[in-house]
Length: 332
Image (cartoon, rainbow, N blue to C red):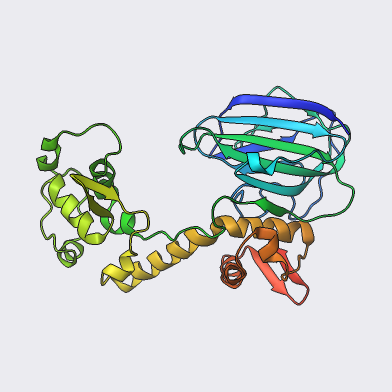
C-alpha cells in the first residue's frame, strides 16, 4: 500500500461555490465518454451537501472564500482518520485519462496534474473540515484509489443533519433591506452607533398590510424596522440589544398572505430542506441506474422518516423516476 502522488492548492478559489476536479485535458484526445447520467451536468442536481462525482468529474459544495485542497492518488484504499474531519463521503469516479486536475465550473483547469496511475474506475473518499471560524473557508482531502468492485456513493460521516432547516420566508416577505437591519441590529457587520437606530430607513419597505399585521404600520427609521423584526420573530431581545433567532417562525405561520405568495414560500421551504440531499440521491441513482430504496437512509446518513418526503421532492422536481426496480436519475 502506498501513495502515488499529491496535488495541493492552499488558495483554491471556487467558481460559483463549487470545487471542481476533472480529467486532465489531452490534446491527443480521450476515449469517448459514456453517454448517460454520469456525464458532468447531465442532470439538474447540484453538487450535493459535500461531493458528487461521475464520468471524469467531481464537484464539491464549497463556500465562496478560498479553500485548502489536497488530492491524493493511492494504489489501494488508504486509512481514514474520521475523527479529524467534519464530513466524509465515499463515491465512485471514472477517469478516462488517468490524470486529474483542479478546475472551474465555467471551464478551464489549473496547471498542476495528479497522475492516478491508470485510467478506469476509482473510489474517492472526500473529507472536509472548517478552518477557524465558520466563514466558509474549508480544508478538503480527496483520496483516489482503484476500485475493486462496483459500489454506490455513501455518506461516511455527517456533522449536520441531512435535512436542512426550512427557509422561513422572511427575506421574501420583508425584503433585503429590512433583513439587513436585522443583521446590523444583532451586532454583525461594521460597528453602529446608538444614533443609527434613529436614522432614516433606506430601501424597499414591506407591504403595508404585512407591517400592520406585525403591529408596525409605520417604517420611517431603523428603529421601526427593528420593532417589526422583533414582532416577526426574526430578532429577539438580548441584554441591551438584539440577537438573530436561529430558527424564526415561518412567515406563513405569522401572517395572512396572498395565496400565490404563501404557495411560493411553502415551495421554497421544501426546496431549502431537500435540494442538497436530493443531489446526493441523484448521484446514488445515477451510479446504480437504478438504485434500491431500502438502504437510502443508511447510505445518506438520514433519518428513515426523511426518505419518503425526499423521494417525493426529487420526483416532483424531475430529478428522479421511480419504478418497481428502484430509483433512476433523469437527464436534463
